[in-house]
Image (cartoon, rainbow, N blue to C red; front, side, top):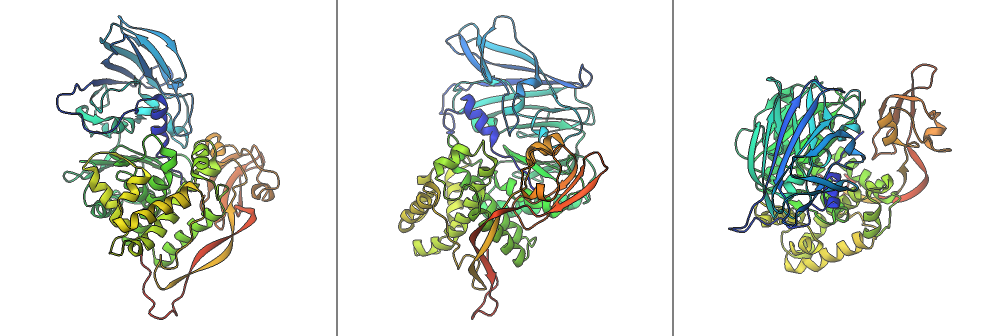
Length: 566
């Protein structure tokens, strides 16, 4: 089962208004505001360990500043429950509170200091999805800008000077953040980098040091089926392949943090500024984890340097779907996928794309429902993947020169010049040679804006493969997967659905589970206990409605047959 979550933190920041400006470097002579944090770990407290946080910033000249506090992120809400004893220093006062923010009155333009305590507001072992709330226990601290930090909601300029310092940590703990692995940091950061920042400390072990500028630091907790050396080789090979593809590193450093979670057969994680926090069942195989890492590390370029800022849900087809396409390409390039496995991945994309409940929906409709409708959330991934295949096959024809989607992506990154730039349709189309720009723009308009179905290009996988139209079925779990994983209780069994037909009991304890949310032909395995002892239920998560979808089939007998190409 694959669970990822790399976008909601930016949406939360946007809703708060903190990213209402561009991402250009600050002009020479412009005033740069400073945002300071002091993090002090207190291992013993009421309800468990806690983190005392002091934040300081310059208040508005008006004498009233709006301050954002944690509210919603990655499907978790009421994050303010993790905040205790929030109070400004003498000379300032909170005058009103709203949904996720409050107004503070102070002397015009004066420094504002706020103290609060961050704690873990849930109990039990680390698990998905409550790991998206602040984590504070005797083994680690894990939070990010959206779920753990209080900060001013105003235009601070294009960049800020960010300062933070950690104190009170056990001597054997390591620190790993979006801005490095030291207890003290001062640096000029863009607002987007701050909005996507992760902060972690714990009894992590160093799996691999970065090995030079642009390298990746790897840290982990727990025991795994694979050796640390194998994890290091996997991450470093992915990092090397992706850096070579783009022609340079996205950031001057990067990080990967791997944590064990209690959910059985689960992969989860979040991409942050300059890195990725991965969480998995300790029985996870390295290949499954590696594919997740391939996707999330690619986000450092596509999603962070090439960024969907104020219209994120409208560009999930690009930041998520195109990223998924390249993750499979890179995994195959490194020899992790055989030709048949890669073809199977592509076929699963078209199967899910053509059977999606969002099939044929306009971009506006998909964007409006993306954050609130789980059945729509996967659609831009498969839509963007299919469009990436289509563009890769057709761009050389349109351009009349050796120019493909790879060339377009690398050109966009080089044009960013080490900054984050906002992705737009015109920017993407403008990255193609002149003769092809209108065709790229038309493809985006036809297949994304209008929702027309993207065809499977016969040449996309090489001359040994043909396209056939075949019957397919939508993935249908038959019960509420996210709620059941969260509560560890079976929730929302649908009458007449595949789970109900298999005898999955509503309200039973969920002891373990395994499913592939992209494949209705792969069995669901559930270990449940409804009061009569543990038992395993196995069934196919297949919807009742049949669809027709293009599928790639091998044709080894074709004249001049060549090996499948990416």
